[in-house]
Image (cartoon, rainbow, N blue to C red):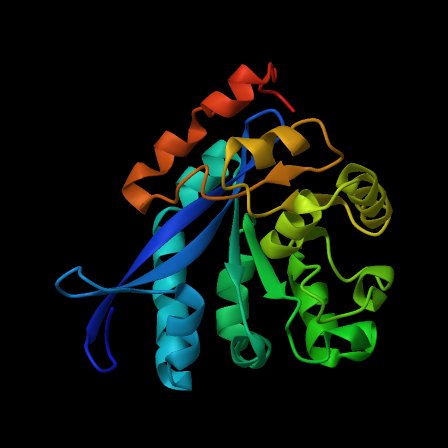
Length: 250
């Protein structure tokens, strides 16, 4: 897709891996990267998406979905989940458009993900949009710990899995005695969902702190995103897990 701001940007779609503590590929996030036509400029994904008018944002979502459908056999064969993040406008579109909703539901590996910044998240099951998303899809919470919501939606059982916000994890990592705080946090959140994924694993120090923690998965720039044609490369157990002595079957 080509988008015009002050300069023309080309959007390409990539897949960011999520690995279990055993190094198995658990899921991938589909992300859209905004690059100028000459390759000299790159715009952060969140900024680029938020700048899009509603019609172009919907068109981008449909483009992502078409790519996902083209690779559906791969996801099913390898039992890998695919998470796609939606904001309030896209959530409304999903709930209003039955045909679109059924397209997503036909792909059993697709997971819908919303951020902690989603409007009125703290209302929990009293937020009709979030409640209906949870009823229609497997729903994950992203950016948990960014300070924008309470635990109410977790107590209400709306989310299957929770992703810890990367900046929240980085702050915890830097504090003296953070091990005790982090272990307590993970233990309590695990009581409210099926599992936790920690984002922001940008280096080996962050990885080493969590390679035996009570989390389901890890995600970060330590394992770069790839385009669809290179999805197979993500199936190889990363070196960090091998060095840590992980058996590869967790």
